[in-house]
Image (cartoon, rainbow over all chains, first blue to last red; front, top):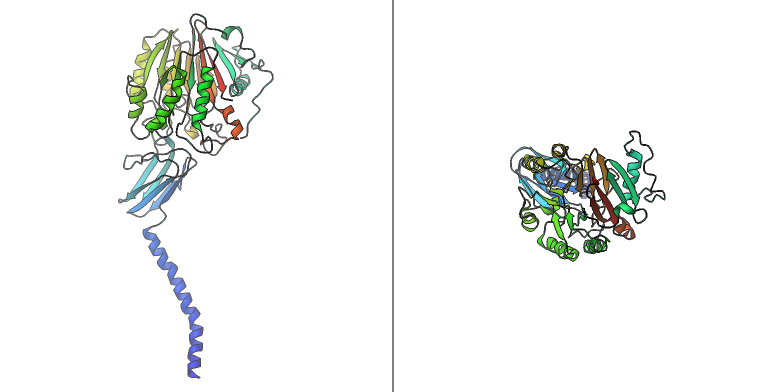
Length: 118
Length: 328
């Protein structure tokens, strides 16, 4: 009888325990994300998406060219510059210092974007 | 592709409203532009715009070579190496352009290529173009497009196509009394800006034309348009006004550009601006799409939106006639 009661209370508690795990899990996932937040920039239809991207220090940002024509990723003040990226080519740069990095496509200079590192 | 009616059964009625009595009216001019897309002839003589449909009224003035006349052909934007849906076979269309040139009843003395020879500045792309254009048996003069100077600041371009040029690849030459100037406006581009000539080139240009007679016809050729076609898409050159100020004194200035992969023409005083077809793929009309990228048209229509420009000079007529012909 006692044992039965034990099992019953366990059965009643189990959902709470599971719920607690489930609630905690996303929290942990979120803290992991903070280290590697979204760092992708899509180059599509002659625009950078997103045009402003905010990332923590030491993030590696990757640009992927989805256009049928090449683009060149270049920071306005010469901090970084890619080779010409053909369709589906990628370029990555790691930002080790906080700051705002304005960049553009050096062959289509109307295309501009910003990486904010904090 | 959404397209306005290009064919007009009444090509002679271009000038409908001539308020200033100068032979130019805006609506008539636009009509002429529309015709240019399918093969029309726009002649500017002493500021008077005359237009003819190709093959119909190209009579007396344009017929055979007389003394003091010559013609050359402008081709542009071959984009060798491009293989996307907008044109999976740019070799075939460049060859079709060569056939078109070789079939011209009056053979041009030389060709001008206004840039984007290659798609990715690769040696094999340049090799392919050279090989195909050899079949014209003509001298060819080049200016670079942004696709030709991708990873080396234009070093390979200059080595191949502009050995005796100044600065980053600009030069001038004289032919049959016409002064030709090839300019470079695809390098050192500034964030948020348009094409750029730069102070060094502008200074050179000023000196280059300073001692020429005002009656010397001038032809300027460069990749990106030297007038502001559509700044939202980068279709213009930031310091072109400075360049044009050095050319104001001349009675006849013709500016030939590429880059926008469609024919367009504008007349401003004694200056005629013109852009050529691409031989590779069309791009949308300004603002007609979300972006300026390659435009896919039905395969059977592709050759109707690619082509060449034939330029005819008649001495003492104060006129360079521009004829755009599509490939099919």
